[in-house]
Length: 128
Image 1 (cartoon, rainbow, N blue to C red):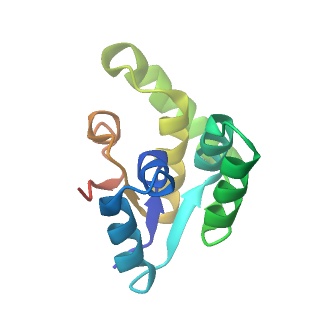
Image 2 (image 1 turned 45 degrees about the horizontal axis):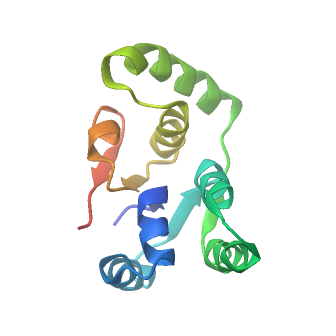
C-alpha cells in the first residue's frame, strides 16, 4: 500500500470524535505510513478555538510525518490553480497538497472528492 497523505477533512472529523474517522485512522496506522502536509497543519491550527484544541492538534500532528512543499511543488500548484480555479473553485492549498502528493507518490485521503478528483496526477481515497 502506498503512503497515505491525510487531508484536513479527515483530521477535523478525528479531532471532533467522529467514529468513522477514528476507526479509519486507527485501522490504517499499523498498515502504512500516515502522513499529512504542512498546509493541513496550518488549516488545523487556524481553526483552533482555544488552547485545549490547539494542544489536541499538536498531539495528533505529532503522530504523523508532515511533508513540506518544495519549490517545484509551489510551481506545480500555481499551474494547477491557474488551470482549475475558475472552472472548479479549487483552492490553492488543495493544489499545493496535490502537487506534493504527486511528487511523493502518496494517496490523498479526503472527503473533498469535488476538488481532489480534479487532479489527474494523484490517487484519491474517500474513506467514508
